[in-house]
Image (cartoon, rainbow, N blue to C red; front, top):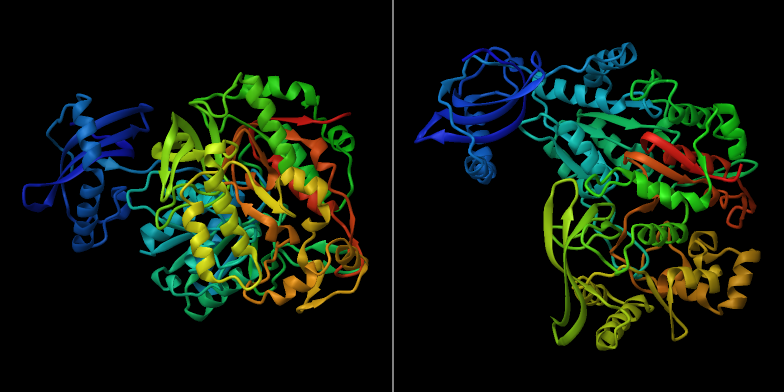
Length: 636
């Protein structure tokens, strides 16, 4: 057989021959870098140490460890072997021991190479290094190269850490591309062992982190650091230094900070970026060369201009004129454009990005109309997770994208003692892995047959939200709540039922962050607290007395009235916050919605809160989600 030079892009099967674990029957798909084509090969491979790890993409360390890997691989890939056989791929018995199967190397830019050299030489000494850069500077490519270097040459146990489930999957896919043994990827909550604690239905509070899981790894790569709480980041940094491990942090200070970020107070109040961007004890390497897109790209021009004017209050007219941006569209043309750009077989083909949940809801409704979707759900519908459901395996993940693959109407569904429930049994395909989650019950919240079930769930929610509720109340509520799927946030106040949008319209004061009013378990005497106490008598004192519930960083007074939290919703439009970390082929950016971000009075600090930087960071995130084309809804 002729020698093939390339890299393995798929392992069709790997199986020990008879009882001889030193010989492996393999089927591989190899991309030949000379012919630029894929070649299927199969045969026998001896399991022996190789003189250089670069001789074979399957990393070989010691024979015993490699045996373990093969056994695990065999168990996990047996079904793939059967699929290959059924498709008629012939097994060719050739000696493939001599093949030079080498990964195709991605050439680094000069800027990237300098950073690579510094990190690989100095990270073992300094222990913590920050790699930062704006959109398009190749942080992901460089991170992949660094990860490969450490695994192949330093025999390091690597763990990638990300702030959310969605960002975890993105960094996991980047680091594990063309890899035989995957890099572990965990959310910050998982690596620190944080779990959701008993609180109001609408408040998410988590237990303090610990470092027990950290001991399993020697090198950590934290991605999207701007979205991680300072307390969690400090815990990991301190552990790494104390235990003499290594930490590479990846970030971009132009992106939006963590939603629970603290404030910087000077003559004005402003949300703080992650502390790591200004920590003088940590070396910072900055990528500046644009490599992801051409420098003349309108997306890069927009992003660079925003980056250089983060603190300037700019109209989009000024931004467009300065960058010669011309892809401006009117609101009424956005949905026809979306319909032209969106491809049902390509999950990341297009998104509309807005600021508020209300605008996201409007965009999703309008897009469904433009796609001629009359029913509440249709096969092929794009959905996005808004909540985590399922334990220990998640059924629905916050931020995950799904396609509806099957819909079955039912009026005989049974949950515990509740029968004859009406709704739809739906199968969802996880878009990026093509795994189908079956038989999820989407309840019809307005059907009279479901009234008894809905009322019981609301009753349990009110018990959980009441003063001095217990962890058992939380358990009772969640057991019933997680048996069905909801697509709407529901509030109950003064005996009436509200959706989120209607509740905000009629009771906007209740959406005040409690931390502006309650400081160190005492009421902060200001105009806002007086107005709330006048309108909603005793609500502040009742919250202070409810000692069983930890104060949430993002908690609002409205949280105690939320009785049902939505799990999933249409995925054509999303907020800029939810889009961070993702990339789409095309983006339609609703600039008109971001004009709602204006300076406001911060009652906690008694000073003006400047939101100019926040608005520009959100713009920056929204613009840079687009890979090919960006369109901006605006009135020039």
